[in-house]
Length: 442
Image 1 (cartoon, rainbow, N blue to C red):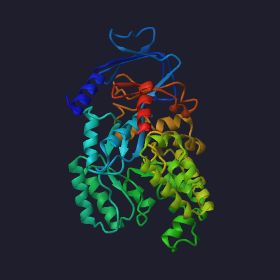
Image 2 (image 1 turned 120 degrees about the vertical axis):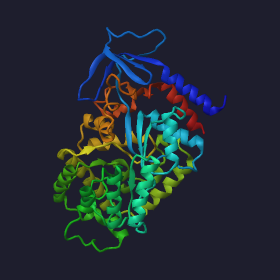
Image 3 (image 1 turned 60 degrees about the vertical axis):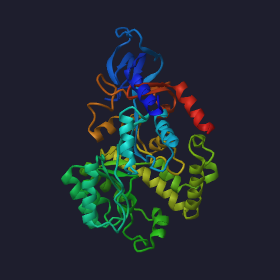
Image 4 (image 1 turned 45 degrees about the horizontal axis):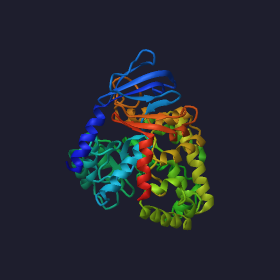
């Protein structure tokens, strides 16, 4: 039997398994609560039954998981992930997909569009590739050379190809952005991502960009009216903008975002990497880097070295500080937040980046429950799949994380896994650690 056929058979066997989590504390994420001492039965990739532990019995032959003292919650999401491109070796593709799953990330919105991602999405859906459920953007809309007619044509092509959304990058001229947005609405495909500088945050909100990623455009919109940087060289603007921000503008921007119904995907940890004075040598010692190719790490060291060479430390500190204030104001205004980290990126490792992002969201003022919602139920609401995913309820897709400690007490407990279930396949932590060890040895 060839390798693909074997993987398919193994995936079928896993999905056909009956798995029972016995006597477990369930965090359903429909609201902030814990259902104590429950038994959860999974069959055919779905949650078939949830009930008190003394009433639900494990069928004969089921895989029984002892949940005493543990917590079962929905799988988490990466709402700004970068999926491997066509030139990446297959082994690395499989590793990246596994890194997400190993950390309880069972849904990824891929934002580095390439036709190969349509194939990866299909392979995951068919059980040929172990990985998170994928939503994929098409090749990015970027650059001043793209014309309005080319943008309209590209929208139609990406819709026809079956992409889930359009990715907006920097450099688009306003007329091209408007043409893309109008065509996207006409054919029924969302667009999300960056805020082109010439378009600006407020216009992106007005025309219906579904998500503003990285809080892009907010600092530019906060620039003080008397800022000396308005006509400065772009490199100087990027370096020093943090010194010329007017925080009094934050509430109006938060309210404009709420009124527009736009989502935000903050990616806070990565922007702290960009703007901090931490040395690349120190960052290169992070434990999770053992699971990615060494050439990635070497490239990230070079990127961080370049960033440091062009960093104004005081401006960088202000960027980090003000971004947290912006995020809190967005939360306070009722803007919906979706969890994302922009991995893999500079020292941002797929899956592991989740645990780098969480403490910064806490520092910004989000509660543990709000953080958990941003990576679970909010994601289902964003995709319109709440009937299928996002909470632990009977009939829903069995994407689950079993934890050793309560994440509502401390969301950092997401790192204390007892195992992960993706589409009904149970992967105990012992199996996760064995595969991670094998990856590290390579």
